Image (cartoon, rainbow, N blue to C red; front, side, top):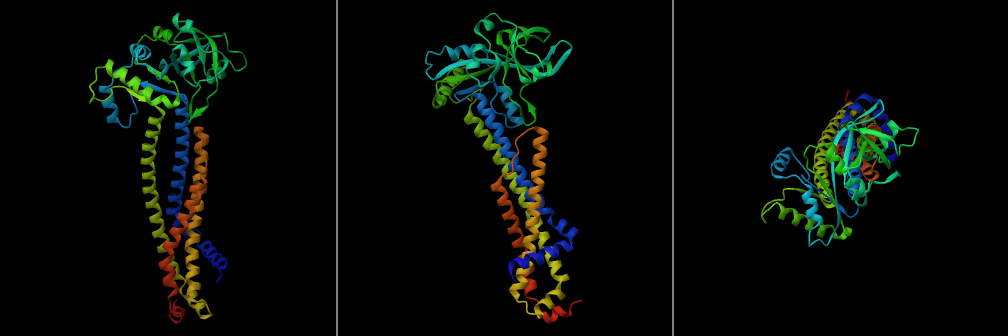
Length: 408
C-alpha cells in the first residue's frame, strides 16, 4: 500500500466517525493551542520589556525606592526596609567628587489625577513632575512645541507637556500650544505635545501631562519618594555609573558592607534578568500543562485506535485474504493515527492563532504566530500520533485472516 493511499483510507475512516474523531483530538488540540498561545504571549511580553528598556534610554538607568518586586512577601520586605529617594539623594549623586561615569541625573515623581478643559474632564491621567534636564535623558519625543526649561523649573511655572490622548480629547481640530488646561484645579499653559506612544498590553501610554517638578511639589504637597533617572557617559559605562550611584546612596544611608541596598536600581540588565526569570517560570508551567494534555491525547488516540481495530477486524481479514501484507495493515493504521493527531495539531494551531488575534485586537498588543514553534507543534502532534498508533497497528497487522473473517 502506497503512503498516499494509506492517508486517503485514514481520512475516510476519520470522516466516517467525525464526532468521535473530534472528541479524540481534544487533548492534542488543547496541548498544541496552549504551547502556541503561550509562545505568542511570550513574544508580545518580550516586545513590552524591550519597550521598557528603550524607555530608560540607551545610556540610562533608574533609581527608585523599590527594585523589582517578585512576590507579596518581597513587597512587604522592601516596604519595611527601603527608604524614600529624596532630592538630597539627587544632589549627592550630582555633587559626588568621585563622579566620573555619571553624565547627568534628573528627578521625576508621578501621581494620578484629573485634567479639565472647559466642561470636559479626563480621569486617571498620569501627572508627572520632572527636572528640566529630563528631556536630555529620557526618550520622550516632542511632536510640537518644546520641552520644559530651567527657568520654568526654577520659577515653578504653570506650564506642561501633554500626551497625544489629551490632545485627541480636548483639541481634536485646533492647535493645543498656548492653550490652558486645569490640573488639580489650577490653570497650566501647554508648551509641548509629546509624540504618540500608543498602547502596551491594552494600556494607553499617551494619557499623561508633564510639569516642572518644582511646580508639582507646590501643587501636590504630600511628601512622596521621587525617582531619579541617571545618564551614564556611555552605554559601556553603565555598570561603573551604577557603582558610583550605589556607593553614594549606601554612604548616605550608613549601610554596612554586608547589608542589602535599601533602594532599587533598575537597569536594562536587571529588566532582562527579571524577564528571563518570569519567562522561565511561564515556560516550565506551559511545558508541564502541554505535556499532560498531549499525554492524555495520546492515550485517548491509542484507545480509540484499539477500538477501531476491534470494530474493523472483519475488514482486516478481507484485506489480508485478497493479498494485503502485514506491513500494509501496519501502514494503514499508523497513517490513520498520525493523520488524526496532525489534524488535531492543525486545529490547535488555528485555535491559538484566532485567540491570539482576538487578544491582539482587544489589548492592542503584538501577537504573531511563531513559525518555528508552529512547525515544532505539528511535528510533536505527529509524533504523539505515531507513538500512540504503534501498538494498535501492530495488533491489527498480526491478526490471523481466518480468525478475522469469522469476526461478527
